Amino acid sequence: MALFSRLSVSDSVRRTVIGNKAVSTERPVDIRSSKKAGPAPEAARGENRRILPGRAILPNRLALLLGATALAGLIPLSPDIVHAQVLINQNGGNGGNGSGYDGDGGNGGAGGNAVHVNNIDQSVPAPALPLVSAYDVTADGGNGGNGGYGFLLLVGNGGEGGNGGNAGSASATYTASLFTEGNFHHGMVATATGGQGGDGGGSGGLVFADEGDAGHGGAGGNASATATASSIIETTGENSFGIIVDASGGNGGTGGNAVSAGYANAGEGGNGGSAGTANGSNAGQIITGGRFSYGMIVRSAGGRGGDGNQSSSILSDPAAMAAHPPAAAMLRVKIPVR
Image (cartoon, rainbow, N blue to C red):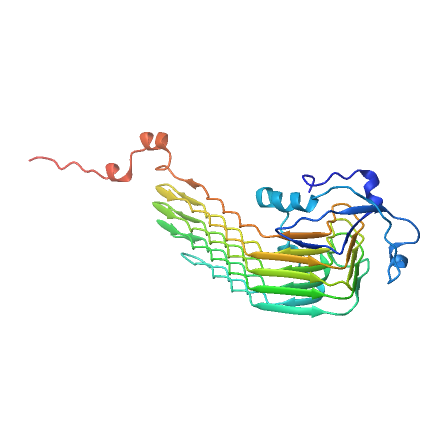
């Protein structure tokens, strides 16, 4: 997050405010800050709160964030969002892991259609469980299962990783007052992210070993979050975003490794999933009080491709092949002439 932050130690007492602005992937918004004054955040909450006029500390900061995340990537948003005070969950199920020789991982299930309107005041006071947000609406694809490890005495064959499921559609609308206290507690979340591809299974065999290729990431879906004019969303801790909207594709898995005294073939990484569509709109107030706590993040990025793995064998190393001829040459037999 340091790539996007210009905060100093004194910024820990500032609040960022977004008021009466609409935000999407096509339209940036200025973020303003003001010094905190008066009573603690809990006492300051209510209909008669007064937001002190401030100066723009980083115009178009959100535009910088949105553009840079597609290149540099953020800490994955939706995989870490596992609890919520109000959770509308239409996520696809995860695929099972493969087992044993040539056991393929299962594919992740597709996300469903999650639509919800929340008119109730909510708060997440400290202390709370890690990564608890106040209001989540999710339709993520399920993760693919990992391939099994394949080993027999002479040959080995690892299982393929399962593909991540495609995301569905998630739409969240908030009209009331929302408050979270403590670090890593987001306000409002809407995600439709593709599932992660499963890793390929490794393999081993004396003569031949063929690993499993990784699964591909699922495609992102459609995610939208709307905070109406009557809404107030406030977070006080660090790394606690006001609104998160994410429709990114899933990452590809990692290929399996192969080990053999003869020939070994390492696994290929999986492809990343394509991005979906993400939209965020705010007509009310968003207030964040901690460092690295952005008012709104709207993200739609393609998934990363997975890494291929390595193989270890005599035939994979040219120097080793020269010192140890292939098995076919070693099996030549002289037939005596009578």
